[in-house]
Amino acid sequence: MRYLILSDIHANWEALEAVIAESAGRYDRIFCCGDLIGYGADPDRVVAWVREHCPYVVRGNHDRASVGMDDLEWFNPVARAAALWTQQHIAPEHADYIRGLPKGPLLVDGLQVVHGSPFDEDEYLMAAGEAGQAFSYLESRIAFFGHTHVQGGFIWNHARVETILQPAYRSDCGVLEIDSECAYLLNPGSVGQPRDGDPRAGFLIFDSDAQMASYFRVPYDLEGAQKKIREAGLPPILADRLTVGR
Image (tube, rainbow, N blue to C red; front, side, top):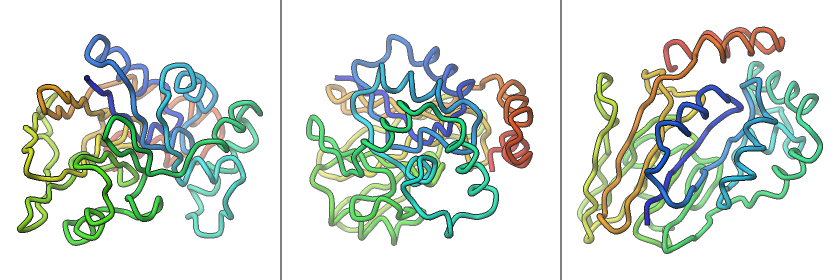
């Protein structure tokens, strides 16, 4: 079985559209690690596509905030403004869909899908030390997570936790062979708001038969996404930061 793993789309239709085109024919099933909305200007278009094509989705913190499920007190001013904008513009049926998403972990085909970590959906797994605790909560040998917007992840090889580095900036794909003796937390990167210095949309394809994880980056209509953000009246920094992937 081949799985397309998406995360942190953040209402960026142009980025999602590029991922759809690039991954076509390469997968059998789709998992999404959350944050479909927030930041970008196309919440309805993104949610409509996910509802139709992706049966396995967990919610993210921006999903909750953008449909009024969370207090926005802990959001920075830019994230808060984007969440409030989304609350005012998302279609009621799409907001209801978001409210019904599970918090994760979601266990499917012996694989886990989470937003932040297996023990806390809002936890950021940025370093090996943080991931070490997360591995003790896994119910499967392989889990997919997002939230950090950083492509890569972590390997537990029984002796220590190692960091999986993102593919080189000039590379379109990086391949990781899965060792049956190890456990993995794999981050596909962000589709719509990368923050690892590479502005291209990120995604992952996991082949359970070949035991191979392939990390991809694909360019998209960046200017089109930025134009929509500015015209929608969202904070301009949300458009500017897409240029640098930070």
